[in-house]
Image (cartoon, rainbow, N blue to C red; front, side, top):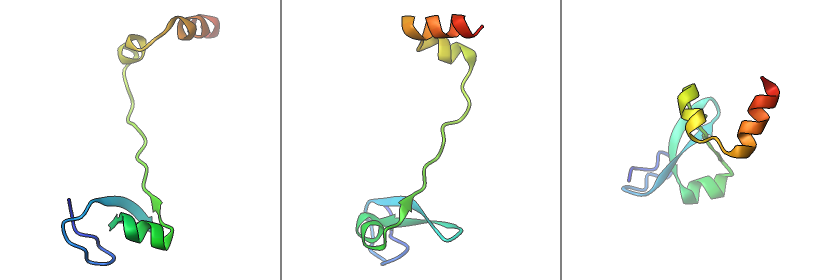
Length: 67
C-alpha cells in the first residue's frame, strides 16, 4: 500500500507506470482514467542449471536439435 502520486489517494494499491520519461506510482483508478501503461520489468538472467531444472522432454528435444 502506498500513496498515488497523481490524485494523492493515501494507502491504496498502486502500480508502477510510465508517464513521459518518469516512472511513478499510480492507483488503478488513475491508471484506467488516464490510459497509462504499467511499467513491466523484464526478468533478470538465469543460470543454465536453472533452465535445465525446468526442462521438459519437448524442450530437451529442441535443445538437442539446436546443439
